[in-house]
Image (cartoon, rainbow, N blue to C red; front, side, top):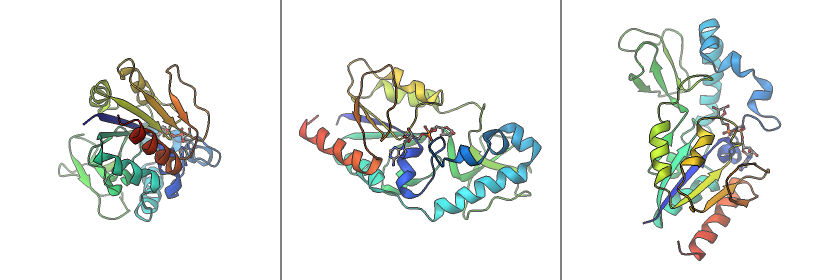
Length: 228
Ligand code: APR
């Protein structure tokens, strides 16, 4: 089976009611990223950081995968689909995709503040001050904050090097190292970009100018017609 590698961002989950970051009405219009999603914020006011992610976790639990997520899951019938996502939601997995790599962490997990390898699934939406790891340290959201390293980037680059088809969906390609993954795609690999807005990149790509739901339907049609 041909390997179809997908790089997704916040726009992928917009039709599930989850806000993006940099669009009109995006999260970073309402919140200062340095105040809620940085190690400095955690040191300064951990309750505020916990509250920010608890609210997002509560919303995620009430959200459902959209047609776009479902469309990518259906493509597993025809391709070896690898999803590399910047999203911390679990909507790709809930739609049925079997290979999902989270570059920026996972909202439904907590992590030790003394040992990065200690990661715990969260049942409900609330992570509280006083919730401890097995080594007695405060638990923090298992997400990558501004300025923190992205441990999964090497694995993601390896996957991109094996791509027969590459699809970028719902990301403004503003944030590195994620946006740099496009440079690991082998020369000549067809690249599709699904986004209702114009996105600039130094790579040649086919722009499917649509929202994820409709855009992925168009992609499916194109890929199956071209019998890749
Ligand atoms: N379908 C597809 N794309 C959409 C939709 C939709 N329904 N709605 C918006 N978009 C597009 C926007 O046009 C924009 O290009 O999704 C993109 C969202 O871009 P950002 O808000 O910048 O989100 P993203 O690229 O995922 O951000 C990257 O930045 O804040 C950090 O860690 C955070 O993972 C995040 C990273």
